[in-house]
Length: 383
Image 1 (cartoon, one colour):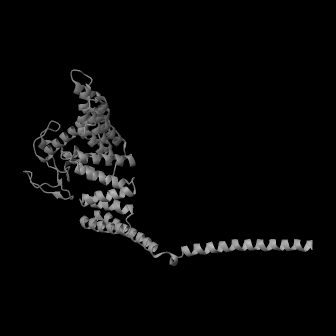
Image 2 (spheres, helix red, strand yellow):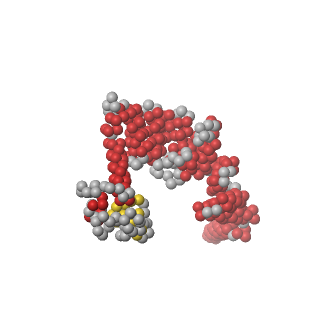
Image 3 (cartoon, rainbow, N blue to C red):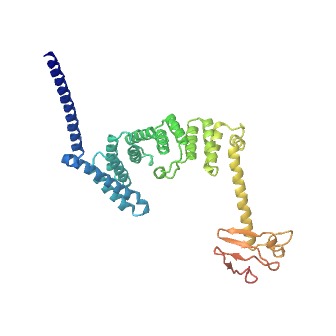
């Protein structure tokens, strides 16, 4: 009897184990079926499907707008900007959270001079993405224009807004030369000399920017290059009574662009402010002692000397006046072929040596390579 009871207990344990295993398998199959139903588009709620479709269409509209926007350099810019504006607006209507569409619409609105829309769309982009460089940059440009800095009649409120946005620009992009340059100008206008000097120093160490058109227009032709940064820094340092630092910055500007005469004058002014090498002649002593400036003056002297020699050659050959050559008058001089193989007269024209009898003038070659006939008081000129 006891043996039969033990067998019955063992049988019950087997049945219970099978039952538990069956429950586990059933639960797994149920969860698998649920996941499969969620992945099936036919099981997706209509509202979710509509949102997914809108996002896809919004990206397509964004790409359409970018295509119009990128084609403005090919002509008919106003029409393409308006087409881009319409496409970006449709993208935002389909997906209000599309950051790129808000930023792009702000930029297009700026070029269409719709500044109110520029501000609202840029602020919408920043609300969705606080570190949006494009949105902060376009806002800084709008507020810079509204500041009145170009007209020397600044609006304090707009100036503060411009400074705030420019600080965001250089916070996000520490090498943004436009941001540092404009920030320095605004600080200088506000009388914050130390802050302006610091901004110009950052500008001078920033890499050259390819996006410099706005800065050139806003500053009425100033450059955004590193040498321009050193020059602006030097001018600010001199005005602040920091002549020695101004000399160093002016040398950097002149070394980067030796052909710029204004930089040479700036260095001379900085040396004068510093006191120069000679108490009696501060400017001259400083200029001659400075190797960079001395080199510039030497090049200028050589250029002027070459121009003088070329002018004398023009007068000798074209003017027909008498000149001394080896102690003889011009009409008795040896043929020019022995003294000047080719003489440049002016752009597009050359004088080639004559190869006839003594006393003949050389033939003139025009810019197309044809020989010109000219009456020189004797007879027709031939090469």
